[in-house]
Every structure is written in structure tokens, then in C-alpha cells.
Image (cartoon, rainbow, N blue to C red; front, side):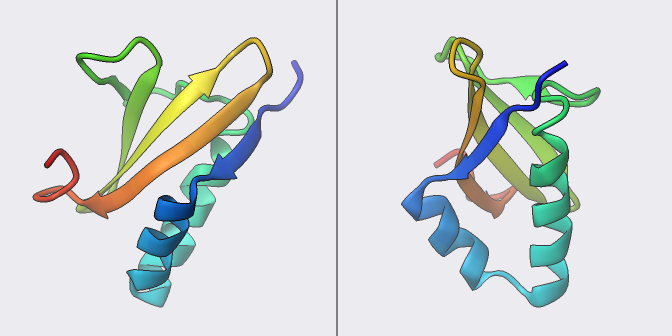
Length: 86
């Protein structure tokens, strides 16, 4: 099975830079795993969007979209669980 390309939106890149170094590493590792399996066990589909999902990384959430036709996972937001859905 071909791998997906993982892309960070500009806002997600800024979110990542604001995080602590240890959390950054955990988030990057989780994002890297999305290249092999864009819908891993434990991911949740978000209501109100056809292709938006989220995964948990500790108290943080990675919100992303999957474009199957072009094999791209676009990471939209990386935020703490209390503020990610606002």
C-alpha cells in the first residue's frame, strides 16, 4: 500500500512550535504514523465535515483531513483538548 504525504498547514506549524519539546516529538511521531494509516484505531471522524478526523496525543488533539484521491493527510490544528474545537 502506498504511503500518504503528511502536510502541515501554516497554522498547524505555528501550533506545533508553541508546544513543549517533548510534546512536539510525540505529535510528530503520531503525524508520521498517519502516512501509513490515515485512519488509525482510535481516530474519530468529526461531525460537520466529510473528511476531517482527530487523534489524541495525551491531552492534545491533532485535527486533520484526508484526501484519498491524491493521498494527502493535511494537518489542520494541534491544540490542547480544551481549546481545539473552539
